[in-house]
Length: 92
Image (tube, rainbow, N blue to C red; front, side):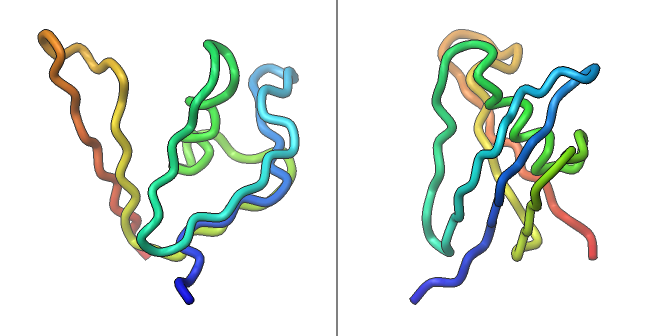
């Protein structure tokens, strides 16, 4: 059985007293890949900002049991159809 690398429970977060994420929960186990899909304004970027501790949760919890999270941005100012991979390392 793979251990949870990331757990989000009842996450609520937003900007300027306006909630953007309302009570989402999911787990990511070791070896799994998660994709956040949705329309513009659905809260994908807000969720990533919360994972990276750039935007603190109003409610709920985020538990990270790894020292590194990687993500791929759709557009990051690159030429043509090139995509970038960004890796964030957490220092304990």
